Image 1: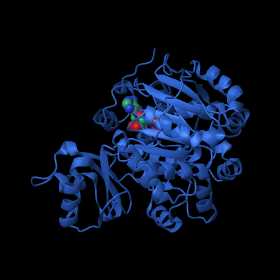
Image 2: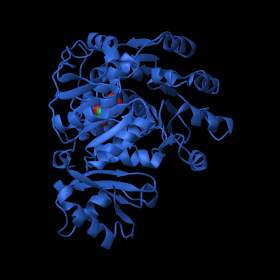
Image 3: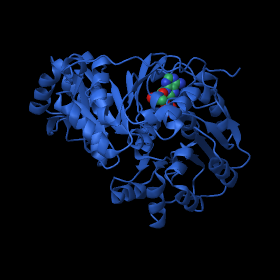
Image 4: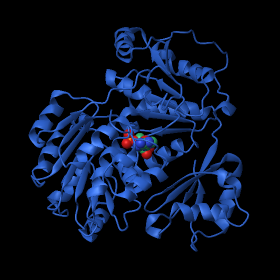
Amino acid sequence: MKSLDFSSLEIAPELIAVVKELGYEQMTPIQAEAIPYLLTGKDLIGQSKTGSGKTAAFALPILNKIDLEIENIQALVICPTRELANQVVTEMRKLGRKHEGLKILALTGGQSGREQAQSLEKGVHIAVGTPGRILDHITRERIELGDLQVLVLDEADKMLEMGFEQEIKALMKELPVKRQTALFSATFPEGIQSLSRSYQRNPMKIIVEEAEGQSASIQQVVYDTEPEHKLETLMRVLQQHPSKSTIIFCNMKNTVNEIAEAIAERDVVVGSLHGDLEQRDRDRVMTMFRNGSLPILVATDVAARGLDIENLELVVNYDLPNQTETYVHRIGRTGRAGKSGTSVTLAGPRDTMKLLEFEKLTGGAFERPTLGFKNQLGLNKFAFQPTMQTIGISGGRKDKLRPGDILGALTGSDGLKGSDVGKIEVHDRYAYVAVAQGAAKDAFERLRNGKIKGQKFQIKIMK
Ligand code: AMP
């Protein structure tokens, strides 16, 4: 049995100190397997899911290896979506916070390519991005990869699913042959094995068994409905299962909008997430959902990918996903970390076969209760009252704002109680802070009338 103790790793003491500060008590299974192996410099193909701790599994060996004196890209992480890329950047920055002068850059679409080029010009140690945008920088000769030592393909199966094969191949041609390549994937179809054969050398394969009973804490409920009554059924489901954090999954953007409107009409705060939103809007919605300001989120699968949330109480499958794996992925967002969760699926007469498949794969039996009938289809908005409210600030990292500055501005000189301040997220040019519902007005006034780090910003309560 491998040691799960971070201090058993032969890595820089400051990395072990950071991990302790972050409250990671012991390594997750993928970390215990992958980190010691990656530290030897060899290639690895690992099975992993979001929530398994895979980011730290590759980030710690990378951070251990980076030479800060060399201001060229030494590690490149390729991800299928912007959200995942941003999440990886956040986790790497957290883990790298004792590496003075460490520069990690996100290279994703939806953000200015010119600004990215300027940052590349100034020197970057680690780049994390999506295939298209990285390739674009390569084609325009804006990126220097001669010093690359480590390449990570994260959620490789998703990249193939999303049609990035050509981009990945083109990209690979530009990378130094002598490098370490780590590939992470939730599944290993032929496409992934072929990627591995083409671009890895004798990789070690790591498969982490799911802990027993992991899905046992998810209650899976199915309600029968007819397509023409679906929306009505959904409202009943929400009446029956009030929760502070619900995701409703749909297969199409139009359905997302339709449902979000129907819920908003019933005076419940709701957010929607689909592929056509601007990056900034997505960031806002995800932030608000994660920090407790949005009780309900309606989303398509692609848009919700990479949205890492703990404590999701309810997942609703408004539409059945086309692939069994998507179902597992969706319901896996609830019942995390030993907490119990509920998944509700609305099924039509034609869905019987699919349901049987899902049941088989998850190993849990579906419950099929009848849905209580209520005459009025309103929602009890108090049951969905968000606990927090998000305040937007028109300044970010580029204005040298740090989370501590915002916290200080809120809590300083007889201000809010620290316990009333929730998650603080600082982006390049704007920041969000979550504050307890009852303290929101006060927080807003303080920020609007006062200064943060000596500067005035525009302050907005986000809706
Ligand atoms: P990931 O699977 O990389 O998306 O990580 C899921 C979450 O677990 C992230 O929020 C990490 O910060 C957190 N995490 C990673 N490793 C550990 C650990 N060993 N103990 C506790 N939390 C962890």
